[in-house]
Image (cartoon, rainbow, N blue to C red):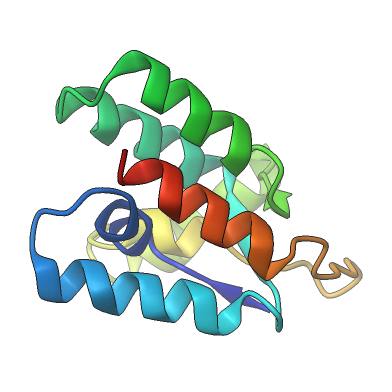
Length: 126
């Protein structure tokens, strides 16, 4: 299971830099069969950035609906407190990354196929 930072998702969905776009797509597609997770924080940030970039609302809706089908994790107040304790040691520079983790007792399986990922990436180009 792998976690991608929001920047990877944004570069895969929006062509701002051709090399970064290709690299992000290659990463996402290469891990699709192995499985990965997306956090509710990723989803929030992705939708925020797409809006800031003035992406068409219908396109955002389509991307959002597809992303909502991915293996998603959220976090509780206790998990936020844990992230706070970790981030405090780094002057809070990476608190978003400190929030995302897999609980030891949580079994997450890859439920999304390469076909879904390719569909999300293809729709983002329209």
